[in-house]
Amino acid sequence: MLRLDQISVSYGGLRALSDVSLDVRAGELSAVVGPNGAGKSTLFKAISGTVPLQAGHIMFQGDDLHEIPAHRRAHMGIAHVPEGRRVFASLSVLENLEMGAATDAGRAGRVRSFERIFTLFPILAERRAQMAGTLSGGQQQMLAIGRALASCPKLLMLDEPSMGLSPVMADTIFDAIHQLRREGDITILLVEQRVTDALAQCDRATVLESGRVVLEGLASELSAARLRQAYLGV
Amino acid sequence: MNAMIEQFVQTLAAGLTAGSLYGLTCVGLAMIFGIMRVINFAQGDFMMVGMYLAVWIAARLGGVHVFGAAAPFIAAILVAPVLFMAGSLLHRLLISRTTGLRAVGLSGEGHQAQLILTLGVALILQNGALILMGSSPVSIVSKLSSRAWEIPLLIDEDSTLFLNQARTISALVSIGVAFLLFRLIRQTGIGKSLRAAADNPEAATYVGIDVTRAHRIAFGLGAAIAGVAGALMVLSTPAQPFVGTDFIIIMYAGVVLGGIGSITGAFWGGMVIGVVQQLSTLVLPLQLQNAMVFLVFVLILLFRPQGLFGRTVERA
Ligand SMILES: Nc1ncnc2c1ncn2[C@@H]1O[C@H](COP(=O)(O)OP(=O)(O)OP(=O)(O)O)[C@@H](O)[C@H]1O
Ligand SMILES: [Mg+2]
Image 1 (spheres, protein in one colour):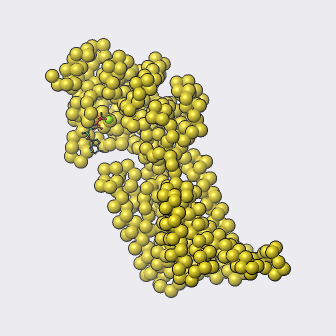
Image 2 (tube, protein in one colour):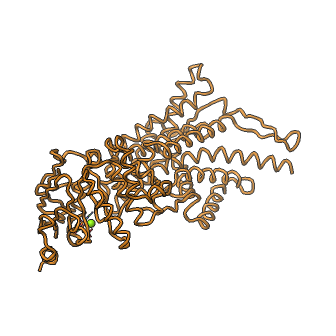
Image 3 (cartoon, chains in turn blue, purple):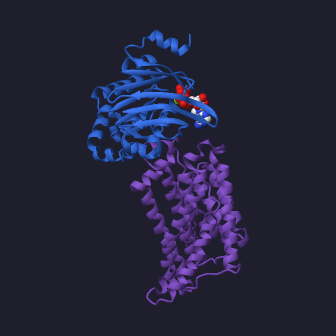
């Protein structure tokens, strides 16, 4: 469904990604892990189109994304929950979800997707009129995921959804991701620092280090030991 | 005593009418700043362009009998689409190069570049007007400017409030335009996507909002509002190429007073300035009225640093 073919990205001369290739299959949950600064968020931004490619191609459902501006990609079915949540602080919870639902698919599937969001995160229904900026960190993360789901995406990209959350709240988020995976209609690409949790859930994992893929494979084949080895470079 | 009350009410009314117009000019500036985070130094000059344009349109319309006394106000409304288009075009050609996601990598997020750019636009507009229109002031002569509604004050037999018709209608049109704009921003889909783009341009892109387009709309709206405000102002203040610089300080003061980032607040900020400016003439010489404005400005900010309507909502 999503194929990255030898992509490279630089920030003003500094390489952030070099020749990264990745294959994401429909209906699967793929994880991308790696140390800080490995280029995980950059990889997501390249897919969303907010950083330009220096080389390589990204194919989404058979279309080359090269000529497609970033904001159009949301309408094609790519939803990106950025690192650090980034809810629309001065809009209410409901308005945030409505902004997410402004894509063509989101409009059409609005009733079902809102039902799904509120079942997944009942607190959002309770707080629907509250200003998003005044929500707690965990609630903001739920809203950010909810906003992405409201667009009825085909591909959901989650960038460190558990970052900065209490273990309990992080578990809630992981449960939600697990639930989404079980429902199976959305392909998920997940960046996570909690490697063990991510690995326990995903079908397939990619280890990124200094902008390069150092290891990839089915989660079942990637033993913790090999992963640790790749991670620590020992 | 009654004479004093009469004078006070008269001055207050003058303050409220002037304040409504100032409020609208502040809304234009706040619109651009609130959505784009761009400080537009050319805002006063957009107003100046609106003034000249209104004079020109009103002169054409004035000849047509059916419009009669309404000609200046119809002209003010017609200025809006012209300046909207001019503002959008300016954004497309110049401003967009230094804003939005493009500015992310630039030093200071592009603020220096924006500052120099809008200052440059201001200078070009001022000097362009000087070349095209000359330096002698022009205004709209309307019979409404010399007519007043007389409203009896019920304190005694002969105390009367005089409301200059041209200024009063201008004030009402300003309030109407500002109100429509608030509705647009608060309640419509376009307004919400403008606010989302303002809150977080990157996240807005991820939900499919074209942030550049949102900025173009905001800049166009800001220019249109400045133009309409100028067109209404020209009934009482003659247009000349540098008239914008007289107003830009008031605009900034109003926006800061209302609370940076709050479009509704900007209107009230402008209103406070108009009222204080007029009321100060009761106790101080005319030359000191702007000194009084800034005294009140400093006092308000001392007690409410976030401005009258400053948002307390955390920004991501
Ligand atoms: N806007 C930017 N300008 C310059 N360099 C950047 C920019 N964004 C990221 N980088 C650099 O690119 C590299 C990859 O950053 P990225 O944010 O993709 O890492 P990450 O894997 O997401 O890290 P983390 O786990 O800390 O979120 C880093 O070296 C970072 O310093
Ligand atoms: Mg990151």
